[in-house]
Length: 366
Image (cartoon, rainbow, N blue to C red; front, side, top):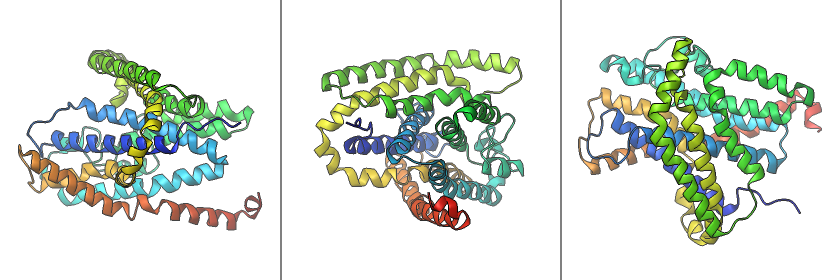
């Protein structure tokens, strides 16, 4: 009997809910960070970073699941990743650059984040080839969240080498890819690998009580990660500064590993609960899937949108209602944009398949 997939139908809904919630938390935190909202907010800036770690674990789960269940070839894998990533990533680079050209002089360069605040040829070319986080790369202007996409693309590439490369080429190719990706990306790779491991090895059913225990264990690790994050990251950053290498947002890698393990345990623990409450999850499936379906666009475009609002003098002050309205407005704007980016995934994938088959008849006959 084939083993049960880690992502069951009810688990798929739950993971979509987690992905949508994580994207909203990043948006909310950044609204506070750029000063558009100055009222009460229950989370620190650590929450935005933690949400990205959740994305990494989720990504590992989903990508490994897709490869295993579809028995994908390398060509299928590469086409799927390109069709998913490039429409949004290229649009984000163009959009952020255009936003900066329109309003860049109206706010301080630091508003774009210290690595993403200035426009240059490198700030367009390197992100387009996902080299902005490699060694001395620079990111796209006005788009700090782009860093995590670059990390994920290199995770995908290294995973592809592990899965699809001939045995004799596997480790040399992985070594070459990690050398190109750079130290800061490689340090975060284990977090993504936790998710890939879950998809392949954690599908055994557990009882609901055991699930609750695993969730509690995961929560403890998450709390420890948050408690130790600042002090540990300062020490790792100092050590790498001494050797002349800026870790940037990978300076939290040690406690991020701990956080990632905690999230992985929670995902294992929540599976029996998702099965038990499947009817309830089915009832809210549509709005969850709709919001998750624009989460990539929302994540990658919200920062330049926020800076345009800052440049235009917008602010909602201390009004929670104004904050909520701003969140809704940005979600709606990104929903419209997703219709020409994220939602074109299947069409672009089909076009790539047809195009490659015409150019490679031998491959088409496989």
